[in-house]
Amino acid sequence: MRQKKKVRRNEVLVVDDDKLARKGLISIMDWKKYGFEVVGDVQNGRKALEFLKDNEVDIVFTDIDMPEIDGIELMKMCKKEYPEVKFVVFSMYEDFRYAQSALRLGALDYISKISFEGDECDRILELVERKYKENHSQKETRNEDSELIKRLEKAWMNTRWIFNDSEFSRLYELTRGVELRTAERVFIKSFHSLQKLTGEELEFPSLSSVDSMLEWVKQWKENLYQTCLQTDKTKDIYMFARVILYTDENIEENLKSEEAAAQIGMSRSYFSTRFKEMTGDTFHNYVISRKMYAAAQKMAKGTENITQIASNLGYDNFYYFTKVFSKEYGCTPTEYIGRIKKMFDLIRTFFEFKKKL
Image (cartoon, rainbow, N blue to C red):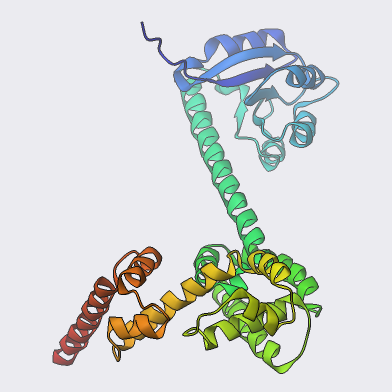
């Protein structure tokens, strides 16, 4: 017989130096109705810390006025040692200063003990349950954001986006979705890393929007290629920028890694290793990708037919060219041209429609 999956309840610890009040709170509340389970009760903050050391607890319901370690001090200590634990504070004091202190430390709620009657108990637990879920949801979102930031930092610190247009476009769009301060942190860190590769002082400017930052990075990338032509710098990042330009200028030739390595005075084996490290791809695969990009550009212009384009790029076998192009773009050259024509037809129709308005 299939057993029902046990639903995990949020585990609660009750802390109060008044034993009767503690037991009364536990008995009067319908904990299970709102997904809670009381796993322990202790008489002060010191005992609570001892309990937390050996037991898993999600929420602590604590009094404020207790001997040894009071409720506010307990919250402060737990914020450092058990940051995942949430608090609900209850007290005989209705002074706003106590509530303010508790809420400032992240309490889900501050409750007067005189509220523990009938329907009010349901309202309290319902409110605590909602606030706990909201807090948990926000934490998950922050964790997701944190993972995204780590991925962005790692990707921008890598040099692949400098040599790979599709990787740059991917990172460009991903980064547009983060906040200004986050983008600033990512770029400052990544450009500090790139500084070691270029051998130059790279100070990332203070800009007012994520888009302006990305445009600055795009301009820096373009300037890198201009610089590599104007200087004889021997840093790998400049030397491989020269290889990329050499590849694009000679894309219709049958390019070999030996020839590319000779352009920057490297051995073939060292060139092959460093090229993959810098671009994320082998030189052979990179050349194929750039040839297909050149083919797509030529198809968009419409001045050559597909057979001419294939031949000019060094593909005498039309069927093999079609196979390689399809792998790169997800459609045949004929289908690609059809999509371009359809797009231009839509644009033309749009402007004709605008003229009639």
